[in-house]
Image (cartoon, rainbow, N blue to C red; front, top):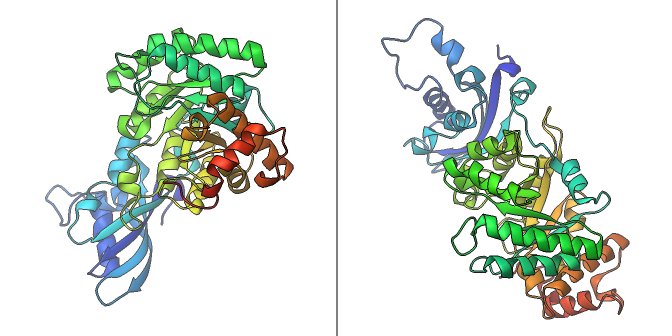
Length: 412
């Protein structure tokens, strides 16, 4: 008998030329007791106590390959509340097994007892809103473009121009962290000074997510440097740095600002629909490890994911998950004022919509691009179609003329 509180349940899409039920049993053994045959040190009851259990198998047979959905329960005592060991268990050697042609980890289910071992986001949706001072609408943000090459002074000027235009949030691109031409200390100091000025002029606060991604031994040092220079948000490339690096950052008591999570490189193992790891799993683990704001993909943007996948990931970040706070979904990738309506329609109120070129590429400049995003949001919330925006929304009208041809289609 399986006690659900003792297991993490993993669901897989599986393809094999062999009997799928037998392959599922071999997979369960390989990823738990770890051997395909009985060994001399196997004691009575060891496999029963530590072995993974095949819970269900749903099979579709074809002439050349058997396909199915397999659910396996893994005893928590084998790995504990340790994400690297959890991933080693549920997504380790099975990708190398010759008997399996394709396998994709579709989902993970955690009992409340397991979730209670994790702190999750400190801020999440509610805390991010409190930090910005906006509670009743979707949030608008931007990525400073070009991604790299701007010195600290120019970067800070760019931040000022979008802040006075009305963005709630500014982030470093994932490609910049602590380069010699724009070190964190200089960039954060200059940018926060400009954001303070913008707040005095506009009366609106803007978060700036500073990318602290580095070798794991330097991440906390980068974070401390950013915070000591006034940073009000941090960012980490959590796939390349690692889930444990994110958890280290989020769990540290000295980190008292939200953490923005960029998932670059994730598509290397999520893009194939039948092999790898699903974005749903990535979203769950990021939230578990403390991500306050997590990239979910892009609605009507330039990324490979369909809108349904973005909506699913966003829902995973926001739905009940034991003691773990909801995280704020981030829609980013090819966004511009003309995609704001579809974002709000698809993702609702609790979302952060980010634009890069869609703000900095506006024909009238960055401030106009930021204003156009806010005007697009306002028109969406009022139910006014973009093409019917009035003359007072000059910046939005210009954006519709510039990018309106991209409506309802993927951008290049």
